[in-house]
Length: 166
Image (cartoon, rainbow, N blue to C red):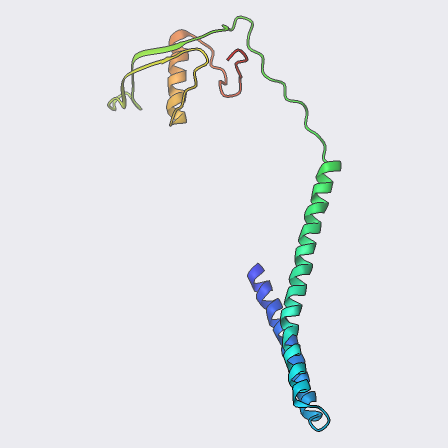
């Protein structure tokens, strides 16, 4: 839509420029006896510059309007925007260990009981404060679910809880 509007505006600017050039040429022909050829040529040449001058002026007005709208938006956000409540970090349970280690030994995973294993003999040891990079969130969730079921742990959202001692 923007390019259509730009083309329409350019068409109008070109039309106004052509009218100015045509008017200058018409008056140069009408005043050929009293007007020198150099002045007639100068007036036609300068009228050709009207098109570029109008285009520059309209572009500058548009840019100024965009900048003013951006400043108006910034001023609105600075003054009138209500602030959010402060974020309360989740608290770990009182019996939560201060140091920990996750060990998974010789684990096999499959999507369904009748399908072959997709992960064979998985051995993982994650020590306290180590960072773990994983490629598939669903696989990580499956491992965490399995680990929690095996050790009778309650699954917590490990992505929002932040260990302070690390």
